Length: 64
Image (cartoon, rainbow, N blue to C red; front, side, top):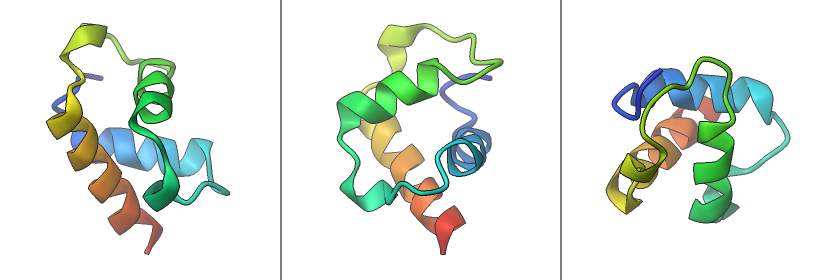
């Protein structure tokens, strides 16, 4: 999985952390959770704020 796989990452996070409200998540935690996902194999430094915002929004959409 790469940073560009926004919807796949959001779905995995939703399944992995079902009790978390993604609206209240800090980007540092989100970044750490993404790079800890099984199958994630992209450069850790490429997960900037813009990418994390997109993942957060996709996770919010997934949760609704």
